[in-house]
Length: 345
Image (tube, rainbow, N blue to C red):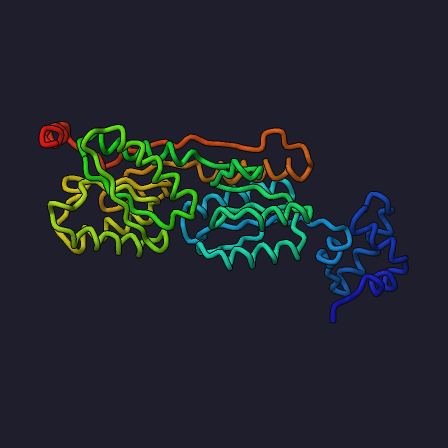
């Protein structure tokens, strides 16, 4: 059985209030008394019940973080930034992984409300913000991570994904590509729809360019490989000569399909650009061009904004980072090849 604070007080020959002061306000207790109480705590094996204390106070030292896919290195790096900044503020992070499933997202939000976390950081699965507004109504601040919601009034930290999609596809078109495929998940995921919108804008700016979309179930390597298999199975004359993948995991799967199931060469036959610039993007068989997001900085900035929301001092409620295109071998084209493609167009 657990040892109670009353037992500690009895063993030390002091009041319960004195033990509480030693635990929470040691400056109010003499050194001799504090040493006596500490000795009793150690001999009895007392462990303080922080959960109960926080429940009485109506406030905890924890914040909730909900991400779409904890296995994705991008979100792992975001989580590291969140954890590092939260630790500096004396807080701990409770992580929830939704796997892009709305039901799992709901379960985590219910749990965090029950735990009375200090605030919630979330990359939501869709556009329904009613559940997040309920958290705010219960006194729990919310900050969107890697996602903007300009119509909801929610605080957010994100990258301009429309610009990122435009950067990726404008680069492919500038190298003479004209048949571009976008491989992404459900358009209900705002990042996917924004990256696709940027891709469409780039295609609309170039005469003769076309864009086809290939939707996958989830943003994973396996789904990228499945999309690659669909491309491999297309007649050569209808096959895209460039692919923009909604994230790097999909792009890695596409590379695998092209290398293992066909004689398609990257970038000679199909140029490829991913998104996120995860650590091993540069270490793939053909180093992967990618749109870089500052993952750790996104996480740290989200905590900073949440802390200001908690204190009611948030003046700037939207933080936006600009994406950066990192060009590597998967989309690099020699000028002679690019000129030949332009001549054919």
